[in-house]
Image 1 (cartoon, rainbow, N blue to C red):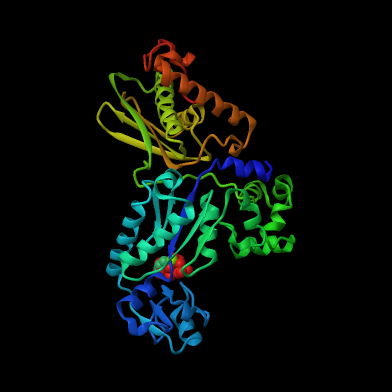
Image 2 (cartoon, rainbow, N blue to C red):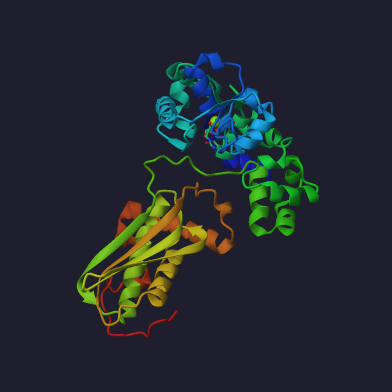
Length: 416
Ligand code: TTP
Ligand code: MG
C-alpha cells in the first residue's frame, strides 16, 4: 500500500493522546510549591535504595530517568530532592483528569495513570476544531487539578497521536493534519516506533535506517526481506503512519462467548453432532466479533459432562481472527486433542474468544493473505444479509441438519 492510500485509509479519524508531564513529581510540586524549580525525584531514597518512579524536568537535565536505580540517580543528581510516592494522591488527581477527558468524548481509553487516548472524531462539530479541543482540555486539566500540565497530540491514528504528544513535552500541543503524517514522521528517529527497542534499533542502524524517513523510502517487500515478515510489515505500517487500532473504551468486552446446554446429552464419540454444535457456536462468536469490529487471538472451549464436571481448554491462534472457520478449527482441535470425557455424555458446550483487539476491519489490506481477505469479505457480506433478512437467510450446509442434532453416522475421533 502506498502512503497516500494509507492516509486516506484513516478516513478522517481524529485521535487525541494526552499524557501528564512528570506526573508524580508534578503532583509533589503542586502540593509543596517550595519544590518548584528543584530537581524532584519520586521513588528511591537519598541513600540510594530503591528505584526512581519519575523525576521533574529539572532532575532530568542531570540524566535522571524513570526506572533508574536510585543509587545512579544520587550519583547523577546529588542535590536531588528524593520523595516517597503517594499513590492515593496520584490516583485522586488521575481520576479528575480522566473525568475531564470524559467530557470531551465518550470514547476514552485510559492507558496508564496519567495517559489516555480519546477518539474525538464525533466531538468535532460540537466542541470545535481539533486544536481548540486540545487547548480546552489542557486548560480544564490545569484548572481541575489545581495547576498540573499535560501534553497533547492529535493525529489520525493512535501511534501518531502518541508520538505527537511526546514531541513537545512538557505542556506541549502538536496537531498532525491527515495529509502530513508521513512528513511529520520522516525526520524522527526510528526509536519512536513502537516495538523498536535497543536491540531492534541496533539491527536497523546497521541496515542504514536511523530516521523514519529511511524506512519510508524502502518498500514493504524490502523491509520484510531485511527484517522478517512480522517486523518488516510492522515497520512499514508505522513508518507510513498506518495504524488502524481503534480507541477501546472500558465498555468494550474482554471476551465474547457462546454456549449451549443440550436438552439431550450428546455421547462423546458422536463427533458429527459435536462438530455441528461447535460450528454453530463458532459462527455465533464470529458474528459478534465481526459486528464489534474485534478480532481474537485466544479460543477457549468449555465442555460440561452429564455429571456436571466442567473442563475448559484454551489455545492461542497465530493470527487474530474473526472468521468462523478459524475459530471452529481451534475449538474442534481442542475438543479432539485435549478433552477426555471417558464415557460421559456432554450436557453443555461453549466457545469463547479472548485476547480481543479492536481494529477497523474495513481496512482489508491488514489481512495477510488473499484467502483470509476473501473470507472476511464473505463473512461481512453474510453478516449484513443476516442483519437485514434474519439469521435463517443464510445457513451453512453443515448446519442444515439442525444444530446439534445427533446423527446416526458415527465418525471416529481425530478425523480432520
Ligand atoms: P510517564 O507518563 O511515563 O512519565 P511522567 O508523567 O513522569 O513524565 P512524562 O512527562 O515523560 O510523561 O509515567 C507516569 C507516571 O507513572 C510517572 O509520573 C511515575 C509512574 N512511573 C513509574 O512509577 N515507573 C516507571 O518506570 C514509569 C515510566 C512511570
Ligand atoms: Mg506522563
